[in-house]
Image (spheres, rainbow, N blue to C red):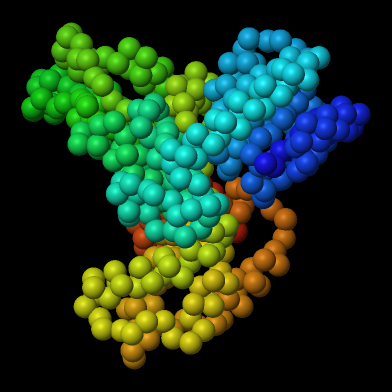
Length: 454
């Protein structure tokens, strides 16, 4: 049983560690700041984290919010000197198991600790343990290819939580497979035979938002030549998957929140309300916490969407999956292009494993497919200069996030010879977002020649 105790007061930490050791818990790590705690939780499999709420720089609630998605089976016990209802609610919302107020009586702590350990064992028993026996994942997850222990634990947790029918938020970089996981959630949920409706929120304009999501009747506006049910009604009795939810305009979030709360929609041109029973699964590569702080995303909507939070790690953090994924995409590409190849040539897999793949699984799939298309003999080979170039790219100057995004957009466009749609697919964004970024880049003289060439 492995425990992490986090508190900015060294005296409190040493006292707690001695107390735990006297009760038989020998494997106890300590940490005196939130930033280090997040890294420890990401890198180490703890059974329970005893976490102080009030700490400088990053408080306990922020540690919980940022670390829990990376270690879903770890139970968190929050400890604070301030008994505040709103803080308790927030802590429980982000996945804390229990909340203790200082001064904590030892017996109360031991009781909470034992119950947390029992709950962890129960969840792992329901879903299978990522560290012990082979996971018994349902058929709902068969399209997600992985041997990574971290991914297998995430999938076991997802399988357990999917059955609740509660809203789920999936985060992760572009190309990590958020929609694939959303479909697995639907199949593992309470309504697997219901419809699954996927919507890219960024592709729906503000002017068409109500018509697209809530529906309209014939004649409701110019061009409405027939009744249209809208996404909510289409997904009734099933799952509505909202990709790129972070792109939802602030002016539309109130309307969206009302439907989630009331479970009723009104079509444009029709005064009658329609009751809908829809499970919401959302996905984003935007930091919604930061968006809430910047007042570009409603905090109450974020809470409504994140009953359960799942975070997909980037491919560079699960490199042990690259050979398995590469072979899968190789077989798909050979079938698609009717090519009979034996496999990867000498050194080809090493080239793939040495790369970071900023476009993640989507980029790996494209690279393997291109390798199959370019193969003139029996095996796929890759130019080793790809690896050299990647390492050379690490030697770069400091720049803003915007400048970095511009540089990467330019790099992808150069690789696809200016094809905007292909660039959007690799970047994991909509065509409109690529066009918007190019429009912004055109305002800067440094990009003038590059943009004219593509």
